Image 1 (cartoon, rainbow, N blue to C red):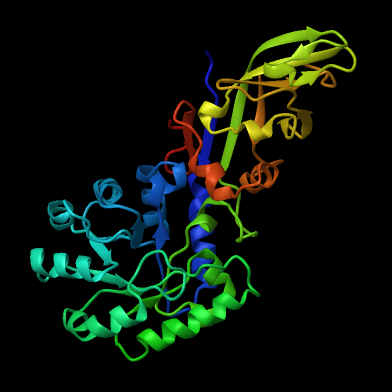
Image 2 (cartoon, rainbow, N blue to C red):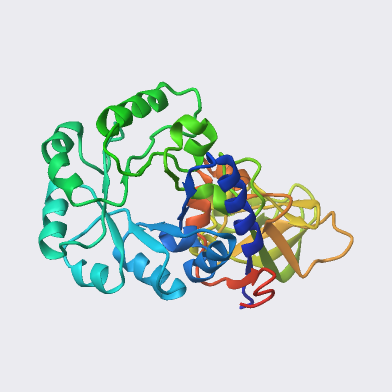
Length: 353
């Protein structure tokens, strides 16, 4: 079967990082979040483009992701592990010079005992109730931890995508209460926090989704394009059905294109009878059920049969698909499958797969 082509614009990722760096306070360092394989787009290529743009600090979810980033970049840039120092990670953290963000008293104990003198940071919980030490725990261990010279103290905003949400100011106040005067660089803002303004920036910001063209950074350049090859054209008579469960019945004679991709490739069944794909700027409705490997599209109105149709591109971005599916752009990006032919576009690696 012909494969769909996912094009990733490394220049756009770099431009988005530079734009978010400019939006951060002039004295603030701008890092880059590249967890989940750089939001599904390929960490090895993405981190090199970001390093070329000027990023010197990277955040990943787990130590194994950190290993990929270190191998791609070599020594020098700092690689922070958001899940902290987990059991079994000690050798990898040491050998690859990874910096865990310690989230609990247990992790602090593990790290200081197994890797004394090795760089680390601390994550605090300011109200999200996900990762990090709560105020009482931090108060109990802060003096000991600060004696060990942590690289960074951070927390994470729960509602930064909603600028007027009361939780933002509440978490900012709590972060100040927990950290003012500690003499250690601090970080609170991801993409949404950067857009909230300088009060949230502290010494380091760490944009994620904004690098990859997603909301809330609406000025972001589009990063991904996804083209689906047409593998068959079929004339369907009025009253005939298309796809599983009779998901579409033709009201009149229609010309139906079958394209190669489906929910196994991260294109959810919620797109059935709900989205358009595009021939250039011309929308073509998806008709019938999205199946595991195939999608059917009404192309009756096209003058010529295209070789492929675009589901992501200039006319439709990840957030447009997310809105239709009732999810967020993060999920659309990170579920894009591995069967796509991936092509990276940039001045450095133009056209390489």
